[in-house]
Image 1 (cartoon, one colour):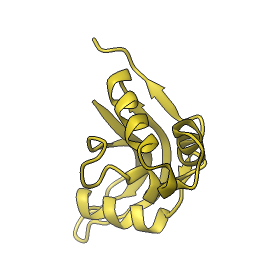
Image 2 (tube, rainbow, N blue to C red):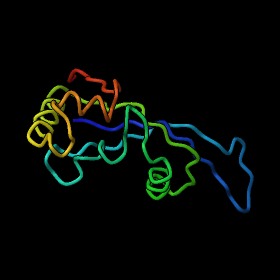
Image 3 (cartoon, rainbow, N blue to C red):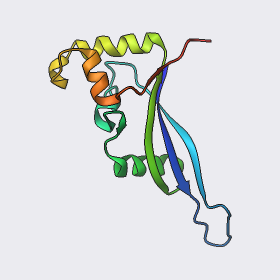
Length: 122
């Protein structure tokens, strides 16, 4: 099991009432798709060097998911277990040309930096 973890800030802009505070920070997790399945390249499309590579796109995506205006998005980590990480490395290694890299470790470092947090299963 794995998820891409983001710190987001969103705001509430009600029309007939006031709220205080109107800005909130929270952690948002995007479930990671199994390597090789459609959508598994989320990291390639949305991260670079451990950061968000297209914040406006992710803000829009998360606004749609949450139904509130998102002010900021910051990538924090890939939260994973050893099984998922191993499968991810295998899938990357099978297609290194896609990433113009010499190893799966190089790919993960290029996109996720050091932001991979391996959790032991409970």
